[in-house]
Image (cartoon, rainbow, N blue to C red; front, side, top):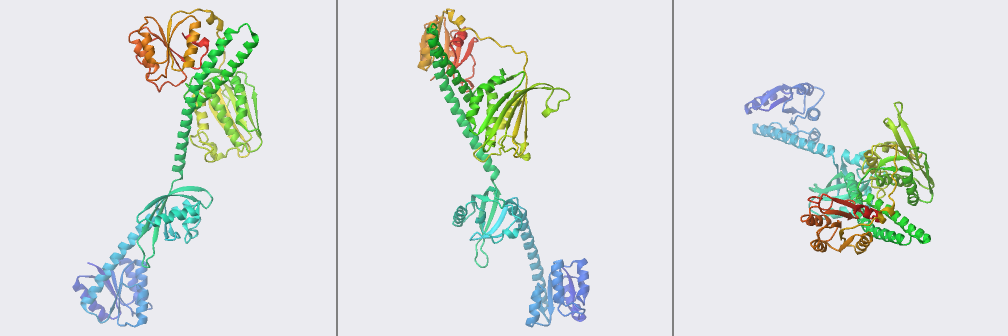
Length: 620
């Protein structure tokens, strides 16, 4: 049963109250005639209720004591008094009593007041806990929460809201319109009005400016709270920082765009390869026919030289589209850099001077040539973007020997080719240096960089057994250091002499399956001129028909053909001729998108377009 303390200075009245309460089943903790003593006992005994007379012995009356008891110990107080004047009633209200009983009173009146007071106190406790729980959820939520009136004026917010907008104090927010943080206030007002026309929660994408000027994207969830007593509408909003997700989405779109461009580049390269093959082939035929005319011979050599530059361009397109097969070769870095010099100069502005200092003693390394070119181009483009106004880019090479005492950029022992790309650009902040090789990390403005260039460079160098380092400071430019293992004892293979292949007469039958008329005509002419008997087919069905009438032949087929690809054609013909020799050709270097090579004749080769007369005859 509830525990009650009686504070009454008239002892007879106090004992009478005690008797009534015990008859009701309440437990009496004590009777006191002054407020000071009652408060000291309450501090330790913590009763459920206090019955207190207004007029008490001592310096403190019941009204003052009731305020202390409730505010300090949260214990309900019922006031007892023989007075009901306006002044006493007004003071009683200030004491926050849970009941007010005028003496004399009846038993039922006393019990009713006690039960109502206990019930009200219980309900007030539950309400207070509910409010505290709501306040905790509101204040400590990971979302930036706020409340506002119908006009958008903020009435309350939590600490996450203040932190999200980089605001120092809460008072800077209260009373301010939410639209003041929108990048475009008109857009913010339009979104707010759109929400007010809904009867349910609404989620919107907002673009806001923090107080420090930083732009962020948030997902705003808005809902209308029940109307207050004055019939005013209150809005509750939850803001979730969406900036990182938006950035990732933009990066994904950029990657998808780059992939589409890569596919386009691969397709263009395939078409170029067919065209270049035809130009190269017919130029070779022309060169053979005019051997006695040195002037015409020089002009044809010019055509072939230009064709070779087109071949190099196609390889760069294929490297960009990642459709070029990765094949490490021993290359002369100095020769590659000299070939790249003109293209690099076209990549930068006229106000940027590009110079090369090629001092390496042994400029030979093992790497995929296309990927090495891609590495240098990426670094030059980054350097170009970092230079505002006039500037310079220096590409330098030198040989580095690292022994036990070497501590240069964490190199292991051995001989290294060092390639330096140095610019006079704006430099890189120290906090960004440790992240520059991470995918998608970029310090460039939005829509000006993908964050993939340096991560690609890092992957290429590591895949080739090398290391890359960077040194930079704001306003002092940037220097990239690439280290790749030197390759010694280079044996330069002498190219085959074309005349030895041309002078050798060939024999036998070759079925040529090629859907491109120019390429098919060229190949057939070259093979016939070398002595072969050639059967020409523009599609796989025609090739199968021609093969049915032959007992001994070789198949030369393009891989990409309509209706049936070259692999399938070779497989069909190989069912009847198990010793069939096949020479595949294609302008695509990545052939994984076609049916895998299975159940094919053992003797088969691949010829990559564009190819020379010598390469064709050497493979056949």
